Image 1 (cartoon, rainbow, N blue to C red):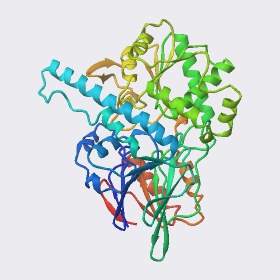
Image 2: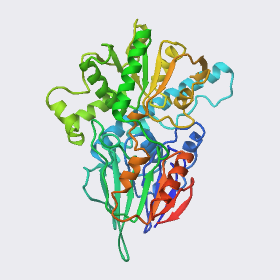
Image 3: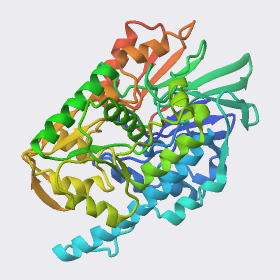
Image 4: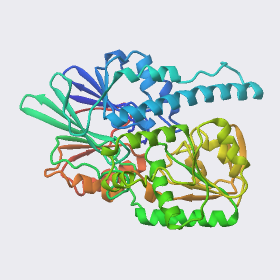
Length: 465
């Protein structure tokens, strides 16, 4: 058995791990690169012929884990894509949205370059289209948590609750080999304990090889309670100044979690009764999936929904699906809260709201999620004097705030809490899905505490497992 790292190796996007097991090729995750310095990899030929891959196992529906699916299917992959049932539903929404954005961005880029007198080709070509995304959907095979299924002869898999986003699954592979079965665990993105809406991450007692994320492997989070208090404080200060509160938010899980807190704040009168806009058709659609799969929510969230107090619906909440509805937000006098995607400001409607507010000292941009290196969100988070948005530069006068307590990723202590579930240390631990500094620091931390072989793979590197 061997593995090749086609992404998320000393960076946080483009997750793709290619397993070769007894002549069968299994791809775990199929994500897109989102960092500016790495986006060219999305366009490069896939390292192996897509038609030679037997199956894909998908941990969850974030684009950095699923966003390459339309391209690999268009280029020849025809096997099954295994995931949980909510992941299949949310990935459909995610990929259709991504395809539309790819098309729109290509069109806008063409118009901008023509206006600036730059050379073609025209029109600019999207990585894939919404039509390409639709061709992915018939390949999905959905399974509940803890249900074992055959991936290929001699290879069985099961998904286990990752506690990260709705339907996110850690993957356990059991491979029949001479000398007995081998257990391989892919953590996917590990969530956090005691968070609202979702259940705690699953623990495992044994594994031969573990692939684990390290996004926050070199830091610790604020508590959820502290994060909520800080968000309320930011909203109150901004409303008093007469500005808008912009919350760039991932449509999956983060938006629903922020709604949970805003519903609570409004109910308890912790913040003024401002209109809350969810300006993201994708987030609106994903919230419907939350309602459709209550069995994947924690006890508290299920109880609220059962008693008619859904955190995803309250009187001041306005859902804006159309472009015209989105544009109309800018005509409202007084303060409003605008939740819009994308979470790292790499696309979507948040860019247009930034253009309307980034130069206003009375407004606030509140980041409630991780901003990867090379993204617009990371650039704004660094508080530059000016920032380039949709081809033009704008002065950064708005308040820029970051609240890390809402993160859906485990911090260093929580990652160790997950590892402590193993009664016996795994033989090998591959540290992946983290920027190089975080990956290296977490690996060094593990080497002082684990008897396992700790490996930090490079892009395209191969290892026997």
